[in-house]
Length: 248
Ligand SMILES: Nc1ncnc2c1ncn2[C@@H]1O[C@H](COP(=O)(O)OP(=O)(O)OP(=O)(O)O)[C@@H](O)[C@H]1O
Ligand SMILES: [Mg+2]
Image 1: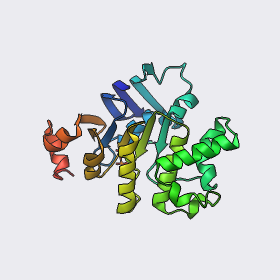
Image 2 (image 1 turned 45 degrees about the horizontal axis):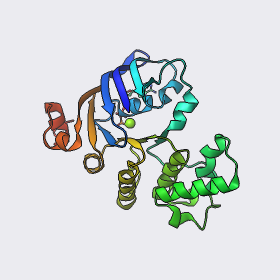
Image 3 (image 1 turned 45 degrees about the vertical axis):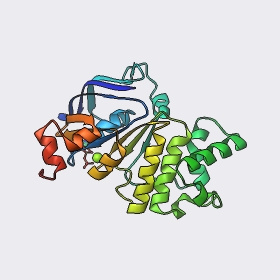
């Protein structure tokens, strides 16, 4: 369960996130949509404290995951990030073999048992529907895979360490339609085991795969509702204008 209360976030003097309160239920897919620069990626990066890496940033409000404010001093950021996987717009495999990409996080966590790693790598690659395509070339470089395969590998890498939340920032924007639909099917399947939050510029995609959608504009969460409702009967004029393409 994720709950944000009055979240404000600043890059220096610039306020990128304004007073956002929302709740996300476990085992759901939540999509964030909105025009470029409205704060979707910034907000997503607050979930695993990735913005901590940027100098001069500041946050107010409560960001609660499973009952704990993740910005409390006592929180260990490494532990937090183990529980929250992230996948980016451009596939970013490590310059390692297919196997070692997926095993990476497990090794970092101190697991080096060969049999254990083999089992977990196979499981993660199966869950991203990549196993059959790569099982005979696990020792080959990840860069030999196609873009869509690389993205599924990155998802497998994120899943291998068994997070409970998976964050995805425009994970299909660099992919062709077939790879995109594979990833959409995958997201639909993964929500049985994970809570997924996805940023997308593709409104059809949000409508197809998400349970709830948040529409952002200028750092505010303008509307947050069941996806069906948001796309068929939005409460706000701004949402209506955006989803019908009358915006910008
Ligand atoms: N590292 C940074 N330092 C300063 N300002 C930033 C930084 N990253 C983002 N911003 C600003 O914060 C605002 C929100 O940016 P963000 O990347 O979250 O938007 P977005 O909704 O993800 O846009 P897009 O759809 O183009 O990816 C923008 O005005 C952007 O210029
Ligand atoms: Mg973005």
